[in-house]
Image (cartoon, rainbow, N blue to C red; front, side, top):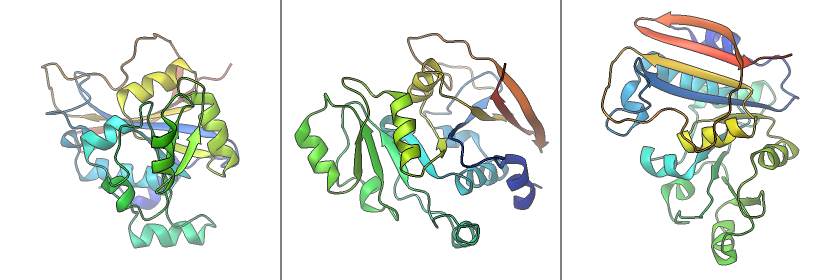
Length: 236
């Protein structure tokens, strides 16, 4: 059985002052990112512990608007013990959640905002309707990162300037593909779920732009039949 203290050691970043984008996904053995359309249907209690540990260690959680709608994101809140651990380490009790949206097609009354325990962030671009940005500004901090599309590099710079250097991206596949194309991914944490899915489920990264990025294995350890992989950006 996995132990939280060991996972904290396994996944801690050596220098938290340096901006670092970590992406976390789960996939089946044959590469499916979802089961019946949901990534959560592939996990188990061990994967949930790793998932919670990555949230514990993050400054901000980054997620695409499509994933918020599909996975039913409401107010993200770490358990009391995790919040206390963060405070004891000099961090905020709860990491905020930042939603990336190119069209602002999310209602300000959505549970993502209404149930938030920490004021969320909305990341978009300048070509989105000003009235939609104004409406969302009532329930979140709106960051305009780009002229006619969200610029991933500018997004990460602005997050770091706000004190959110350690970024955890929880998807979805299109946001992940954009981060790969912009060469912003420092780390991928990938859980291999011991199932074969077949069918038409998509990959963990889906985008029109192909970009090959070399990665280096940091660790690989099993928990039951699950396999937890951590890869970091390959350095020259």
